[in-house]
Structure formats: structure tokens, C-alpha cells
Length: 253
Ligand code: SF4
Image 1 (cartoon, rainbow, N blue to C red):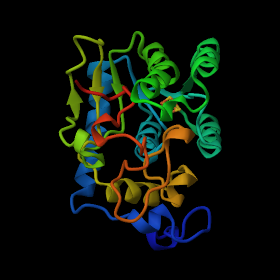
Image 2 (image 1 turned 180 degrees about the vertical axis):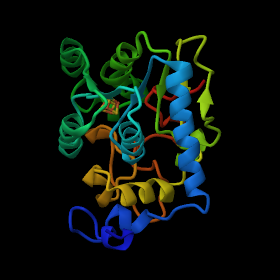
Image 3 (image 1 turned 135 degrees about the vertical axis):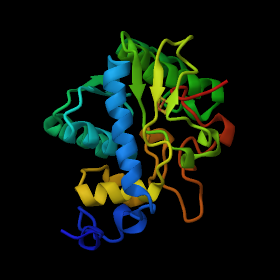
């Protein structure tokens, strides 16, 4: 199937995210080779290593590369209890089809219930402190559990995603001393066009929310669609300042 016919979108709607964004860099093939080399290096040099997947476009590309090349890299997903139904459906499909094991980490239900009882269902909109407290319970604590015993973890961070991420290295050792893990960002130099070109040519399953102008997808209460001309991560915690827009998974001091 040609890329142009795929551009109509797997859901049969038009325009799809693929149709809008698939546009490879001139050196796309080199980037794929380099990415694969880094993933292989991860297995040889940094095992045990795991992929953190939010099931966003970048992460489905990485999981596809892991599966296509039979790399010994298990995948994990943080199921916060507040994800969109589209994301949960993709999680189910990924678990059913991925060769690499896909493990799901959930927050402590006692802590979530206590947080909601004390601060309310919409606490995240009330203050930055409460939003971060919610991320702490629903994301950071499950992340710490997922990373226990791991030497390195793989993320889908790209430099193009935001000014906060403009300097993301492919191998990030800055948290090694404190949190204990090396962070690998194999798509650091990929463009959004590269990501969608990869998805198109390999027919990778993806979150249909991307076709509804959600470029970056997190929890449902904290993610909205973006409008033409808005920044890539404008739909995440849109009521906050740009500088605050990390959930703590990738925050830097
Ligand atoms: S992104 Fe929103 S709902 Fe999800 S953990 Fe953070 S504050 Fe809570």
C-alpha cells in the first residue's frame, strides 16, 4: 500500500494525522539506522533496560522497532486511572500483539481514593501543587516501581516537542547518580514528520486521538486538542505556564 493511500487514515476519516504530518527528513533512513543502533546498544550495554510507553505516536514507533528487531526490551505503561478510552483500547491491542512483554503499572487505589476524597476530582485545576500531587500519586510512584532494578529506560522524548526539551540528548546520564537510571531518548532528533512517516510506511497501530488534533496525549482531564498554530504541547496542562508543563517524569531542576 502506498503512503498516499495510507494517508486517508486507518479510521477511514480524512484528514488523518498521517495525512497531515507524514513528511520524512532527507536523512530519515539514517535516523532509523541510528535509532536502531542505539536500541541495540541499550540491550548490550545498559540492560536491564525497559521502554516507558505512553502509547503516543513516538512510543508506538519505538515499540514497533523493538518488536521488529526482536530486541530484549520489555515495555511498560503507566495506567493512571485517568486515561482516555481510546488510549485504554490501544493498550489492550498493544498487549495482545506486542512480542515484547507489555507490563502495566497502576497507582495505589487507596492513595487515589484518599487524594480525591480530600482534594476533589478536579484538584489538578486548582493549583500547581495539587496538580503535581496528583501526578505524584498516579504517575511518579508507579514509575518508581516500574524502574526498580532497571539500569536504563527508553522514552519517546524529541527535541522538537517543546522548548523544555530542546536540548534532550540521546543518552542522558544526568539522573544516573540520583535516581539510578540512564535515560535513552532514541528519537531525540526525529521530527514529527519522521514519526508519522514511520507510522505510515509500517502501518503501525496508533491512538485515534491523534486524528482529532491531540499531538501529545496524557490523562484525559489534563489533555485537550490543539488549534492550528498552537505549540505541540499546548494541549497538556493548558492552564499552566509553559515552564511547569512536565509531570515529573522528565522534569529537570
Ligand atoms: S496528568 Fe492530570 S490526571 Fe494525570 S496524574 Fe497528572 S494531574 Fe493527575
